Length: 132
View 1 (spheres, helix red, strand yellow):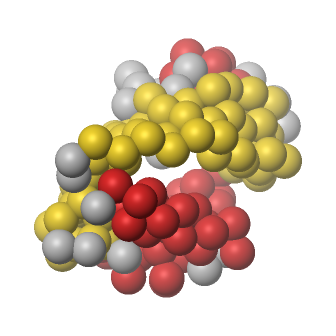
View 2 (tube, one colour):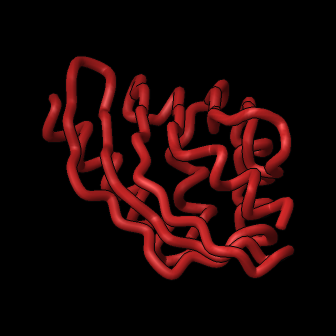
C-alpha cells in the first residue's frame, strides 16, 4: 500500500507542476482538510476545508507567489500518511522579495483520495518577504 500511496501523492505533485489544479483537486476527498502552518500575516497560511476551498487556496498561491523552484525530494509512507520533504524558491509578487525554504508536506489518504494535508515551512521568511 505504501508504494501506491506514494505514487498517488506524486501524481498530485505532477498535476501541480503542470498547472492542472483541477486534476489535483479531483484527488481530494469531499471533506479534505488542507492546512499550511504559519502565523497570521501571509495570505496562504491557514486552513481550507473541502475541495472548493482548496481550489481557492491554489488561486491565492498563483496570485501571491511566482515559483522558480519547487522540488519534492523524498517520499516516505507510513500507514495512511505520506511525508514529503522538499524545497522551493519563490518570489512574493506583492514585494518582489524572494523566499527559499525547505518544507515538509504530510498527506493523509483515505479511500484513494487525499483527506488531509499539512505543510510546514519557514513561515517567518514568508511573512518578512510579504511585508517587504
